Amino acid sequence: MRRTGVVSLPLHGGRCPSWLFPRMVQLCREISKIILLEYSVDQFLKRMSNPFFFQALGCVLGFDWHSSGLTTTTCAALKEALNRENLGVKVAGGKGSASKKTPEEIRSLATCDVERLVYASRLSAKVDNALVQDGYQLYHHTILFSEDGSWTVVQQGLNPENGYARRYHWLSTKEVKLESFVEEPHQAICCDRRGETLDLTSKRSQEAREVSLDLVKDDPKHLEKYLTGQTSLVEFHLPRSHLIPRMGERCLRTLRRVYEAQPRTYEELVSFRGVGPKTVRALALISKLIYGAELSWVDPAKYSFAHGGKDGIPYPVNIKLMEESTQMLKQAIEEAKIGVKDKINALKRLETLI
Image (cartoon, rainbow, N blue to C red):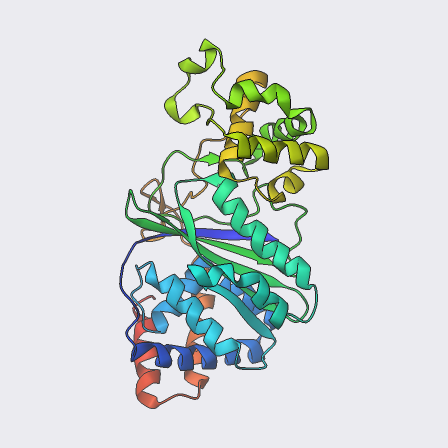
C-alpha cells in the first residue's frame, strides 16, 4: 500500500447542481469503461490515486478545478457509475455519514480479501487523522477496489481555521507493495497551505514510533504523571504545540487495554480501537521529552499543487506524466458513448488543463 499524494483545496460550500450530477455520472461511467477496457483495472486504480489525473477527471466532468467540492462530487459520480456496472471495480464510502457505512458497503460489494479491504479503509483514515497531525479533520472517505483485492483510497479533511481542505490519496495493487502503513507510505504530496505538523509517518520519527510502542508495552501506570498534569518544570520550557496533552480516565483505560494486548508493532498499536490522535501525540511527546526521540514537525505536503512549486519556488513539472494523463482522458472522451455536445464540452474543459 502506498499513500500517493496530498492536495489542498479551498473549502467551498453548497451542493452540485441537480441537473449537472446525472451528466457527470454518465460521462464518468463512459470514461471509466474506456480506461478499464483499454488499459487495466490496476491502471485505473493507479490513475485515481494520482492527484493530477483525479483533479483533471473532476474538471472534465464539469466541476471547478480549484474547489474542495470536486473531490466529494467526483467520488460520488464514480460510486454511482461503477457500482451499477460489472467493470471489475466497486466503490464504497462517501462524505460525512456516508463514510461511516464504508465497512458494511465493502462487505456487501467485495468478492475477496474482504476484511483486508475493511482494514485498509479504516487504517488509512486513521493514519491521516492521527499520525499526520496537520490540522485537517477527515470528513470524506472513499475506497475503490477491484475483484482481486487491489484498492485506492481518496479521502479529504477540512481545516476551518485556514479555509482549506486537504486531499489524501492511497494506493495498493499487486505492483505496489509496502510493508507498513505507518512510515512514509506516499509517493508525492501536493498542497497549497503548509504549517507545523507532527508527522509520525516520517522516517525522522522512527525512533519516536519505536519508543511509543515500548512505552505502552510496559506498565502504563508510569505514564500517568505525564498524562494527568503531574509533570516537572521541564515541560514548561517547551513550545505550546509540543506540550503533552492531558488525558482523562477513558484514555488511560485504553492504554491499559493496549498494554494487556501487547501489540507487536507500531501499526498494531495505531490500529487498536480507542487509540486516536491525542493518545498518539501524547506517547510521541513523552518519547521526545524523556528519551530524546526525534520527531518530525515538517508538513509532509511538500509541493504546491496549484502553482507547481515548493515553498512558492517553481520546480520542474512532470510533463510526461501530465501528457499521459491528459492523453488518456482525451482518448476516453473521444471514444465515450455520449452526446456530441457533451463530448465537445468535455474536450474543451480538458484543453484548459493542458
